[in-house]
Image (cartoon, rainbow, N blue to C red; front, side, top):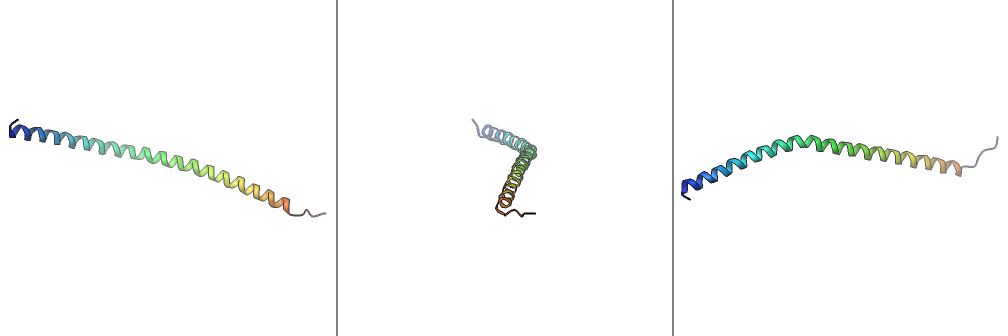
Length: 74
């Protein structure tokens, strides 16, 4: 290869890489909202499970405390 051919090949590869990089950046921008939506959905699911668990624990504690208190006779 002559110097000019090497330069042309190098420039061609460089141009191709720039185009590929732009394509990947564009794709990542489109993927980000999808990833965010998945994270939000998973967070909502975990949050709902936590709420249910807290509610069950609260009910269980209430029942236990009710059993420990002596019943008043009327």
